[in-house]
Picture (cartoon, helix red, strand yellow):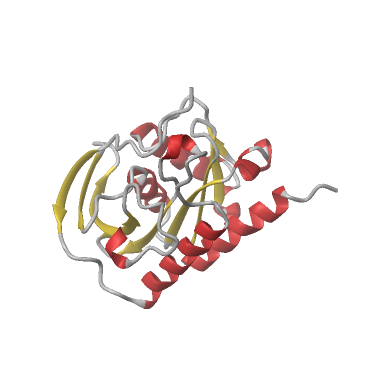
Length: 206
């Protein structure tokens, strides 16, 4: 049975607050999230994943990162009110502190783990793409027994970053999270281009 989407597995200290402040890099992240929605890589559809929202995006900040909120996949365009700010992410302790109009995505711990491996990473995009996911060994992958949103996933990401060509590829699949794909880059644009390019490669049939 596939693991249910949208379940927050980390310990969360959440404080309601206003929407994150506008900025050019935040606007770029939101634009890429909307592109991914149009491509079906982020969203909420009744015939996929039991109708739960899927996919999330984030942007590094000096004291943490901005991330789309839990179960915010439905809107075609997600306003700043659909984002939370994570101010502390302790992967080892499975603990997140966040504020904003919404609670952070259930994948926030995984995003934090990606940022932790390299300070140059500025944006992380988590999508759901059966086309990319079924490419198998083409991309680095976390093991099937590693669940999303857990310290075990964080450890698996760190190991992939050390022991594979993940730093150059900037994209990995999550074998224990059906159709789960994570792309990252110095900017949202670089991460988005890596993800869309992987989707295009998966559609090549000759």
